[in-house]
Length: 262
Length: 338
Image 1 (cartoon, rainbow over the protein chains, first blue to last red):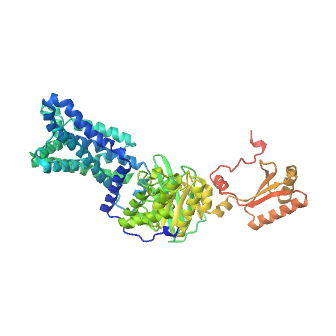
Image 2: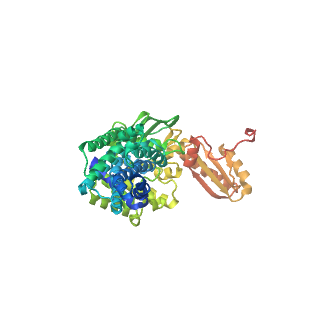
Image 3: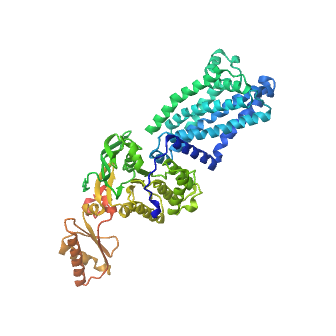
């Protein structure tokens, strides 16, 4: 048992290194508990298949034509929906003793949360990949080419990461993971559906039209459609970047504050 | 408070003064004063809800006290929290390892966070798994380990970089006796390496086995502190216990001891056993003399003794006496029961 003492005290991990270590932890958890990916796989597939074949004929005359309009929307929808799990996971984590240990370590305090959000990018990428892959199998074609698709992917992931901070803040306030999930979905349904994901908002009553127009999700869908179709404008992208910056500016400090108070 | 804690300035691992933490209307910690010397095992003993865990969480910088001060290894836990975190380690009441990760991954993750290179982290994880007899569990998820193994992993995680001060919050709660004694041995080894251990427990025998000094805490306050024997002496008395060969002689033996020494002798539930408390004012030698004399007297009167014991009260008795309950149904005179 003499091997157990180790007096050498290396300098603790830097904020970046600590965050990366915690991101590694998230990926390991996915590796060991793959069933937690059920929603990440199910939601994109269901949304893409259901909405295309249910509404395509009625809304656009053909499922093929509708898919061309809908797919960038389901890409946004699927990824934005699963952001809520950032809050659910954090809430679950906090209930276990391991967070006490993390917080008593000499590393940058928000590192466990930042690391988890970096790890979440893996889940978002998986969901987005499934939507695009399935879309291509169903006949979708992106006229913006590979560069357009990659740029769209980057924009969606950036917005999703920014939005995740809202759920981590919620996850620190609510008592149970289930509560985070319920409230998260109650917020997400109207926010995602009252947008231009499924239909052109011009068909909506005036008040809803204005609401959908102001919805950041609509801006994200517009920019994603533009990037994938090769018709994007700088303004469309800037709107999304501004929305993401605003989300981070509000919810990242709030999360860190709530976490420190925990 | 019957504190006999020596104050050696600058040589305290933990020093708290009037620590208070309130949750809503509950004063979980209500003015705790502790002085933990370096290099020892210090036991904080108390029933559930006494404020042990809250105290430890304050000392480990996880909670801010509402009032009072705490210094850990010379650093203030609020103003110099980062300096404290660099030198302490915490093993929480519920296993503080990630249940989804394997034993090896848990250690690797913490080693990386503590600044080891990837290669050194793996090496250190292997070393510790080996030292704690967990090599076979290296690739198993922590959730699948037995309670004892998880606790060992927990301790291993706490000493990846050997801390100057280790907080152990109820380290053996819920473990079987063999795992407990194994864990105790590990704690002794860690202390032998120069680490100070602050241990909370609700098990008196755990404090008795491990702790050099003990603070008894109840309702958020330290109600007694000192070494084991100081605490035992403080509640009053050495205990004498005699088992007779012939139970029919018990009345005669009792009368004999009572009349010659003037101490109260109790009948135990076992009809052949007598017990007596020797008052604290008497010196230890006096208790020995009294016992020897008693034995001689009994032999001279033809009363055979099969078993005889003289000792300090158990910590159980100390604890129960301090926290206000009686260690056993006290002999009551019939008149007291209306």
